Image 1 (cartoon, rainbow, N blue to C red):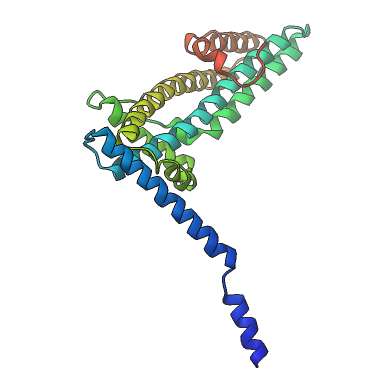
Image 2 (image 1 turned 135 degrees about the horizontal axis):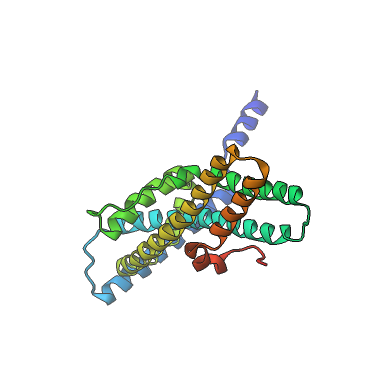
Length: 239
């Protein structure tokens, strides 16, 4: 019986190291908070928004920027692969084989479009919205559909020592970064969507006329000014 109680106590007793780690972590946070408060007193700068609001917005913009960057690169890389595949297909002399290759490379764009369909529904800016308002609304949508809430605590931890002034300035920069990303991303998505619409519409044509249609579609997409403007940002090898 005594043995049973002992085993029960052992199971319920937390590890000794956990108390030490928790205490060390709390002490570190306390020290960081103190250093931040000292900085704020030295700055003597008044920030209109509360610190809680500044932190929430920073986390929101940071998470949405990371999710949007990933979606942007996926779409850009999709178009770069399309361009590379088209260049490779020029070495194929058989027209039927080239036609098959054109269809295959366009199907790769279909998978790209499906992967980020939710973020692709991102709304455009209304004429009544300021850039910060639009970015905040878009960021809320992006973080919700991308499912990035799990990293919020990590980002908040990294902000403990930052003063309200620093957060306000960084939030302003994040707004600009996210706004530019949204513009670049939506431009590429429009290229891909138009490409896929034309691809589906071309299915009614026989092989020979459709071959030339597919060829022109790929050339139009990979020569589009919006694609050329961000082409250098791709993370895959370009030919």
